[in-house]
Image 1 (cartoon, rainbow, N blue to C red):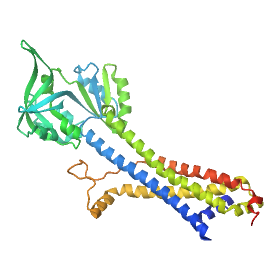
Image 2: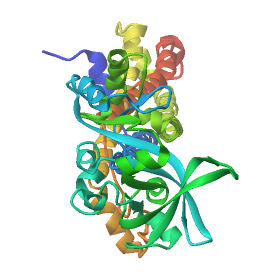
Image 3: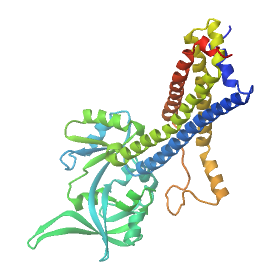
Image 4: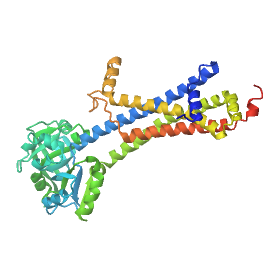
Length: 419
């Protein structure tokens, strides 16, 4: 079956450019437009993939320490029966682990001068392994030394460094609230023995988190028991949806908080940064796509006699417009597909490309002494790549409309007057 002549002529114009100096120049401008679209699409895919990779790395390190969902008493008091609350939560098929906890802001001091603020989390070492990766890693190591009544503590590695303490040293934990005595309100103090440290790879937790046995935390903070239940989900990406389901099923006395809301500032900042980067890099694609306007305008000017001949042979203005839309659209499709292919090639091999560039230039983009992540991560996602390709194609199509409309308005008599 023969193709419509609009497609045949439009494709011929795409390949034209060897007949004369002017045609070669038009072909060169058309090629530059396609290369510009390809580079813009490639840059957008690579940058968003790297941003996704960094987001994944930070998220995984964060979720190695915290649970996917937390169930808390609205009044901030101890849960009456945390086992019943956990059992009710486990009725949701997405929940695969539950553990009690107590979390309170406190001061940790060592000696007379070293004092740091930190979140002290009371945990059940055996149950903690069900909800966090850190709990599973340290279950048989540092967490095994957290025995009830032993008043032992596990510190984040950076927090231990700031306090200048190591395993076996004593630290003093200052509980909030104080204690009323005849001499006035005095702080509640308790000496703890450091039995280990942990390094989660996330500065916020390495420098501001300490863990003790949940029984010791309940006695020190006078909560009377666990103040919340941590949950681990089958799929971390479903945290918001599952949290909504749990909020409806747990009743009005339980506050449900998923990890995205507990870290809302970081989560929103990443999304805004990614959105703004997409807009900025999309402008590169837009500039390259609208270079097609100049290419098609020059082509229309050069092909006026051809247009006039086609019109005299019976071609309608719509057919003429279709020819030049095909020419611009083909350039946009080729540029977009080439950009997607190059972008995916770089994104999937960035762990090879970046070290090669570092070796060639003798530089290190992510020094291990400064950054926690020493290798450039990449995570290409279909949800980013498809919109990029669609936007590029739409921009290329829009760029063809005005020159194609001008071509359809060419009058045969005027165009052939001086031929």
